Length: 127
Image 1: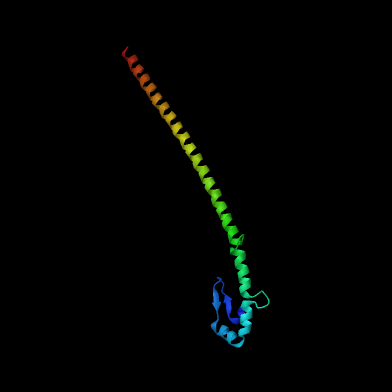
Image 2: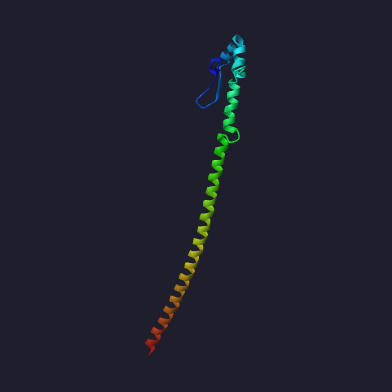
């Protein structure tokens, strides 16, 4: 396996190569190293397995394509929700502006009536 020829992965998934161990394996057993990578006659060498794994992730209908589609669907859903909320906020703003306009008109009308009543009161004091 790869570890026997000095190839491994660290905790973060980075490839680590022990050059001394790899050199020793290439010197002592070059045919075995070639067979390990090339899968001569077996079809299950490192390269073939790596290709299969990459295809599962990157191929048509692979894991990354599926995740990418899910992310696109989530973004589309959020975009629709944002648009809906913006429409509701616009309607709410229009309602509040209308209510404010009516309230302002009512206050203005009450102020006018108050001024009229005040002037009537001062006329009553004259007589």
